[in-house]
Image (tube, helix red, strand yellow):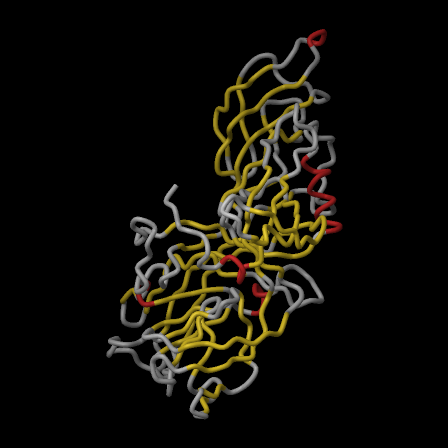
Length: 394
C-alpha cells in the first residue's frame, strides 16, 4: 500500500500550506478504525429494479470496492535543490502537478514539467532549478493496497474450500483490538498442479476466500494453489456527534436523516451510498427471518461476525451451527446442509460490526485557498436505509 517515508510520524516534516496533515493528524489521534467500502451500481439494475438472482451483486443492486489509488494534493515534498523530488507516499502511480511556491517579489510560482517518475522519485525539468530552501508542492497519486502471493495446499472439504489471510498480514498494524485487514481483490487463483485457473469459481470478503468446488471433478488432496491478492488496511474516521434528528419531508413522513456526523481523511474518496463499518466494537442483535429460494438469506445488518446459537424454525426444527449454516461474505446466511422450507420463519441471534451508509457529504476540494477542507459526511445506520432508497445509475 502507500507507505509514508517518514515512519516516525504521519505528519510530514515540512509545513503544508493547505494543511491536510493537520486535518488527518486530528483524525488519527481522535478517530476510530473503520472500513470504507465504496459503492458501485451493478449492471443488472434496469429502471431502478434489481435482478435478485444476479451473480455479481447477489441481488443487492450494488457492488463494493476498496479505494486502490489515493491522491495527495499540494504536498510540500522534500528535495535537495536539484531536479528530483521525493514525495512522502509511494509507490507513485501518477504525477499531476509540480510547482514552486514563492512570493512575487522572489520570482513567483513556477510550474515544472514532469520528465518521468519512479515508485519513489519525481524527475522534473524547467527553469530555474529549485533551490534547496524553496517550497516545492506536488500533487500526485499513489497505490493504496498491499499485494501478497501465497501457495496453499488443497484439502478436500465438502463442496467448498476456505482460505483465510495468513496471520502475518491479517492483523492491521499493531493493535490490541483485533482489527483486521480485508481482502480487496483476488488477482489470480490457479491450481498450479493441474494448470487450471479457478478465478471464476471464488468469492471473497473480509479475510476469507471461498472456492466453490461444484463441477471441479479433477481436484485432489495435495493440489497446490497459487493465489495473488491485494488487501486493504483499515482507515480512520472521527465522529463529531451522535444524532437522532428527524425532519419532515415534503410528502409528510418522518424519517431519520442521520445517526453520525463524521469527518473522513483528506485522501479518502467518499461519496453518497458508500458504507462505513466501525471495526473495534461488536453489537449483539436478533432478527426474525424468512427463508427465501436462494441458497442463502441476507441478514439486515451488513457486517455479521457470528451466529451465536443454533437456529430453530417456526415448526421447532433445529439447524446446527457450522453444519447446516454459516456466514459468508458480509451478511449472507449460507445454508450448506439442512434448511427451513421456503417461506418458513426462523429467529437468529448474532454479533455484528456497526455499519453506516453515507447519506450526504459536504466535501470541498483541497486547495491553498481552502485551508481546512474538512470532509464532513452524514451517516445513516445501514439497517434503517437498506432497500429504502431507489438505485439510480449515475
